[in-house]
Image 1 (tube, helix red, strand yellow):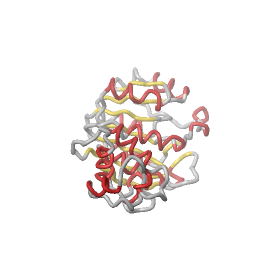
Image 2: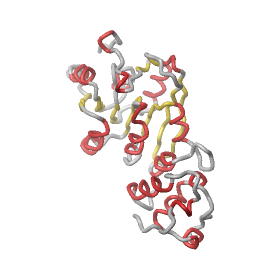
Image 3: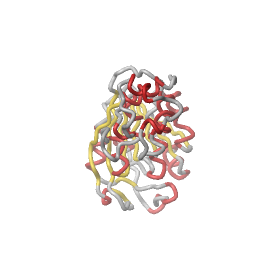
Image 4: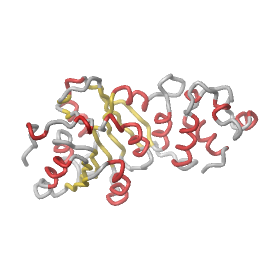
Length: 261
């Protein structure tokens, strides 16, 4: 099997936030996080630094690619790789359908920096049996893996914990990419924690979105008119706390108290 080469016709598209991974260590770390024989989706494969290594391990790989050049490139490779499928489109528009159709065990990808927030909120809504291996701008990865009580803890920190336990795998310098971004990157792994959620992801997301709308306000003021101080005390939460001081379980209790399921 031939390995795709990075050449002139595959110049990175800045509008799509493309930075191609070239670090062999990083490629190996990402690929080996996915068990042999399982099925996966890869988001934004580009010229295929991660893709070829993952294809050698998995039973089935569906790639989601927006860039016409790479979508065509990989479509032409499907004869060479019988375990490869191509979904050509914007990941925010096609991901849900691809997950529903393919029922993958894993999702992997070097996520576009410019949509990493909303894309992560979408990814966190899928309960996969395997998990996810995702690359972010370092600051975003730090926010996702942050624990409650820290300044960078936020909505994504809560949402990813609905189905998963996040863990940092590796931090990469700009030189691990071509062209080099201006920031460091972080690869994180999301593994299922196996606990049955007490509310729906959609209900939790609505609560979290409202609850983190004004980080300086107390949690009482975030939901003023919806929950009383007594309501908070009845579920064991100090109404004077700020959003970043509440852990995942606290957010679930607020969601349930609001009558959302």
